[in-house]
Amino acid sequence: MTTPKSPSQVAHIARLLLILSLAPTIGLGIGRFVYSLVLPDMRESLGWSYSAAGFMNTINAAGYLAGALVASRLCNRFGLYRVLRDGTLACIAALILSGLSGNFILLSFARLLIGVGAAVAFIAGGALAATLVQSQPARASLLLSLFYAGPGIGILASGLLAPFMLQIFGPGSWWLVWLAMALISMAMMTLLLLNPVDIPATVDDASPGRFAIRPVLVYLAGYFLFGAGYIAYMTFMIAFVRDAGGSAAAQSAFWCLIGFSAFASPWVWRGVLARGQSGTSTAIILGFNAVGAALPLFSQSAAMLALSAVVFGVAFFAVVTATTAFVRFNYPSTLWPSAIAAMTVAFGIGQTLGPIATGFITDATGSLTAGLGVSAAALVIGAAATAFQRRLDRPKTAG
Image (cartoon, rainbow, N blue to C red; front, side):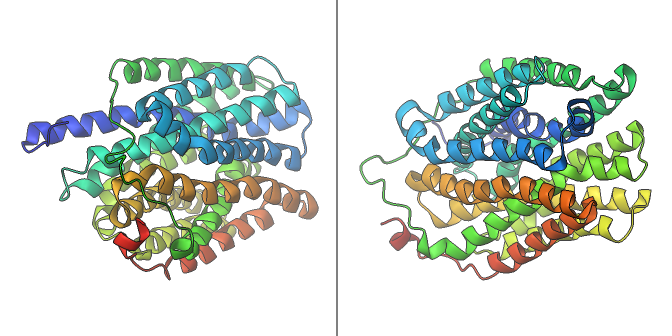
């Protein structure tokens, strides 16, 4: 691969990163998060409790965790782009399956498959993105953020479509939303298939090194708490908005604000991300994420909910970007797939526990407020934990 120097070559890298971002757009922005929009209709139509509804995102997160555990080996065996491609195709197949039946077991399998596919595609894509920006150290943080802005596109697309489909077709139309989002994902996948990015999984196979957990244990703890806290908000906030009297337009506006803010986050946090050698950058962004999650606890007014969506949206995927930046600053490229996978495992464990724990708390208290309060507290503690992470001694970490 040639080293880009000219503005046109930098623009080429940016274009490739935006195309690669369609993988997390499908696997996360649509595959994971559209569930929040259809959850109220599914829960009422299928007779689920909040615990059962939370379980659907827990099984999705368990699949994500499983995918994270095998992603590094898959990347080394099959190559980064192939893993990204096949993982995203699995997500699309699961989206179609989600619209074909209301059977709890079948839907659980679909959520599990989306989780596995999204994880392996996300980790492979993250390693690809980190490799692509190596030659542009001055622009690396902004360019890297383009990949992680992908889920914001999916959130924005689903927010513009799902609430109004549910309003037009009425109760029980949740399955139509799944199929519509599958069609949109197939269109995105076409662009991804037409622009393969073939880069070796490692740069120097002769000395791959070993990822060590102990030096980043406090960071992993903070990232675990981020996974537990953010997913509870993203799972139940549409139900919270609806319970507060929000119409389809209000639900769409809330969700679109999250998506638009997530897409805009690279430009908001570029200066902070450029200083991501320690855990300070992650702690700052995670602190904003916690504030966004906590705002609805003080007021359910339209203005406060809108502010919550903007603050939360601009921060929640920037935390993931900051984590990849931390990996890129502190590890050699040979360790990027395994380091990103290890971070994703901690994150995956947190988001596996978050939805079902919030569901149990909500069922026990009869109010979503208590569960959302716990998720906001998890984000605050996570921010405090990552603040203690110091920059690593890179040569020792590389083994």
